[in-house]
Length: 178
View (tube, rainbow, N blue to C red):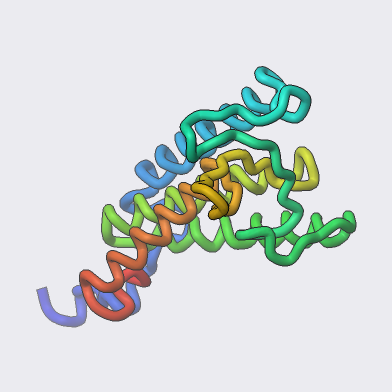
């Protein structure tokens, strides 16, 4: 074939909705979402964490109920309905952006990481739509030291971001963007 007949990889059409690793991303995102929501539903309605109070899991870990009306670490608290809807809309927009990125990615690690971030965004997004706040419940503490309260969706987001960072350092600048 001549050079005129071969597609240019730079200008070749890249997938927007479904790509090479989309099945993996979808499986990871759905698994994370189900685990996150199942844990929250059981703690809220099965055990009744809000009524029955904290559960000591280990001397340094307990399950407590915290309604987070902000974003990570409780930043940007939104008590108004408009603020809550803005956060929910941003969550949806970010999730769509992550999905498009995942459809175009060329690495299994990046796909896995993006699936985890999507799982976390959807898990916390479902809470925002259902309750107007995110259900946080895992609390680490040692003596007077107390870590913030988080949930499985937060763990997915942190693990996904760690995977993206690892990939970017492993393969050089901008590798996660490919």
